Length: 185
Image 1: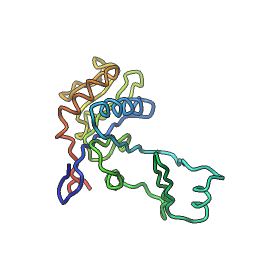
Image 2: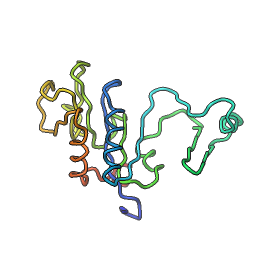
Image 3: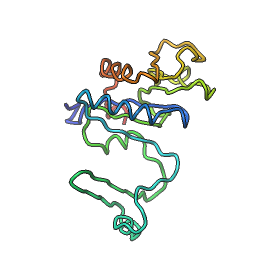
Image 4: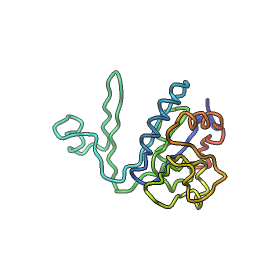
């Protein structure tokens, strides 16, 4: 599939909510469910803290410490690209989407302020104000307590205990998640 000017056509949906609400678990379940339906799925995960997947003593770490801007590690099974930024600053979700290989779906975890269609993950026990009443980009809510939502919504509401229902909805409404880099990026 391709979009305008030969760009790959993909569906993009974000998952937002506070830390500890279950975004990672839900995204993990949806990756498996969409893959089982023959979809190629990628994930973009926002990290709030400094992180490193490279460790002292490894060759790739030594190359980065020596000053390499990028170190690409590849095997017969996977590839990892480590890139050092010249200046501190978080790339936008749109810049990160441009870095990905073609896929059918990209699930974006975090980036709650991005102008992308999002599913809010909300848990009653956390007693936090939901985003959906004020964020027009929230297109659905996934929760452990649908009846406990603090505000009524016309958006679809999904039970976290049945992620397959959310996966079916994503597939059934896939067109609404089509990403257009010329509009979003």
